[in-house]
Image (cartoon, rainbow, N blue to C red):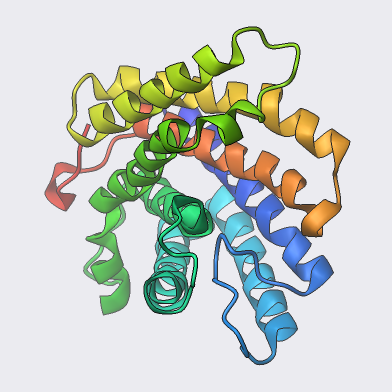
Length: 266
């Protein structure tokens, strides 16, 4: 279990680092982490600072340098940006907020945020009495990690039914019965997400979800990235790393253990 946890954490950190690296290169913050607020000053500065901090945090988590506390701080930062940056933008600013696709960036950020708390919970428990108060408070959010993650997974599954023609085009042309698979995987995402949230065969559901997301990475995201690796600020390339982080989160949910006194799940 320890090796699985370490592998999952490293995979998550590689995925998250790959998502933020283009931000440093292009000097722009991805919509997965912060909405494109009109008139936001010093965007390149914030992109560099956020990108560098995230990569340093990922290195610390991957090598277990105060890994649990670092993952909690990372999750706290991502959650703050999500609530005060992306959520408020979608609720009050975005003219396309009634279109489900407009929430795609926020949903990706929600899953990544949940992943950070899942990663924090995958570490062996540390003594918390000597930790700063904000670290102890963030530790109480660990049980919400799978809920954040699965909210995105379930909503993504609903995308398959709300916009089947758009999802259909993501599958390579050599895949037969693409419309069937569009609906099939939509159902699978919703069922797996609900099973994890409500602890119905949680481990099996999380393993199947992790394998499915890994398959999407290979069959869908890699071909799209090969076709257009640097278009739209390397959007397709970052989706590969996002899928890796998603898959790693699912496998960590399947195999990790959180101490019961933190209100954890199994």
